[in-house]
Amino acid sequence: MYSFPGGTGITRLTVYDDASPDGLASGTPHVHTASTEAYVVVAGRGVVQTLDRSGFRETTMEAETVLWFTPGTIHRIVNGGGLRVLCVMQNSGLPEAGDAVMAFPDEILGDPERYRAAASLPPGTGDDTAASASARRDLGVRGFLELRAAAERSDCVPLERFYARAAQLVQPRVAAWRDTWEQGACAAALQTGSVLKSLVAGDGRSMYDAALFTAKPPAGPERFGMCGRLHTYDLAPTSVTAR
Image (cartoon, rainbow, N blue to C red):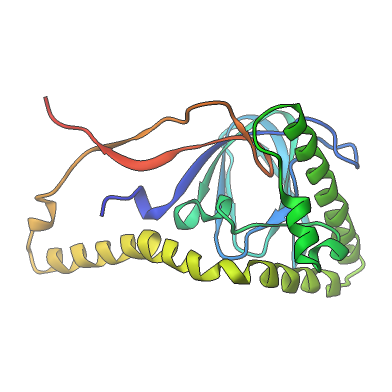
């Protein structure tokens, strides 16, 4: 098993630069229910707004900033100019493969069919998809601002209700996520455990299969994601042979 280190996934993100309902250029506020996500800023500047049970905060983002947040942290990237980010995602990129719930208003979160309709985008990268992505983002901002206002009144009930809604929305997919975890991050950790067991015995045969791999660079046009236009790296390893 030769996965990318730790069974993580990576995506190149260009943050949306059009204005949302509160006048800020931003992505869609959302939460990951099972995975930690990290941002490595490669260009530009901005902030990430986050909300959890400890309250609302803003963290500056500029070139070489590295930050990460755990499951349950509602986050919204605000573009202050040319913001580009490398996203490093736990569990083989699960945050972009279903482990996300957007911070829509409660009346939408409480209805799975309405949520799915609001969260879906038409295929492609054309104007219709762009307009739908902006509308989805604006709906998420509306819900996020409601949650933020409640938190600033020290009212945690709306946030706790959001967490309950999010858990209910993802529940049908969790069994498949477990397979992703077992084949990715869990398998990588177990492989390291096996290697350490050999090394503590002075056995170096675990290094016999040493190899170099490359991954294919992102191809095609950037697709519309929650936070911006993105390219997800294909991390299926390609062996590099000696010459």
